[in-house]
Amino acid sequence: MRRKFRFPKVDKRQNEKQFNANEKIRAEKVFLINEDGENVGVMETYKALQIAQEAGFDLVEVNPKAEIPVVKILDLGQFKYEQDKKRHKQKVLQKKVEIKNIKVSLRISGHDFDVRVEQAVKFLTKGNKVKIDLNLRGREKQHFDKAREVISDFLLRLKSNGDLSIEEEQVLTKQPGGYTMILANKAK
Image (cartoon, rainbow, N blue to C red):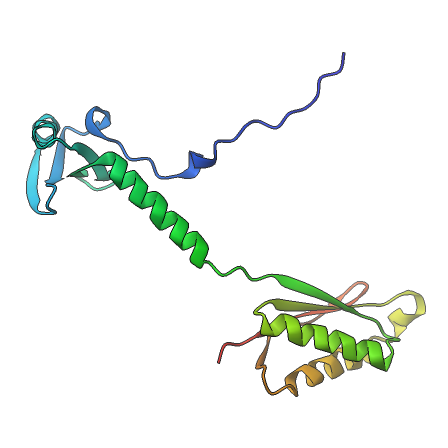
């Protein structure tokens, strides 16, 4: 009987920052910050743990990489909740930029050329980047100069649009089968 390959299950929270708390703190001495945010100072870990338990909170290692680890007295559940909230807010605020492909040929008709320019303008106004591909086939590969003209015309048409300020993110590069270029709209 043949066995099927199965990808190992990956825990989504595996790459999250883990905070050592209470008895999991391994350092002998720690720098303590109390629940009000005031610096208490350097002390033994067991004394800091006693102070946290008397206050009814957890002792959480905030900066374990310091010479003397920094610990803070706080509610661990509330702290994790706030960290998740910050992470979610950062994820929402991230701007996702896509690269949209527009393919042009050496023998493109005028109307098709206009449609491709309109598509590029639409993509650039939305904040996406545009990759212009011009593939050459067969005997077209002998006419790299004409291919350059087609792409330069495309670029000129885009730059003539007053709403956009075009920036060449990747200049015109010669590929084995044609040319490519990546354009972006600079924020004014």
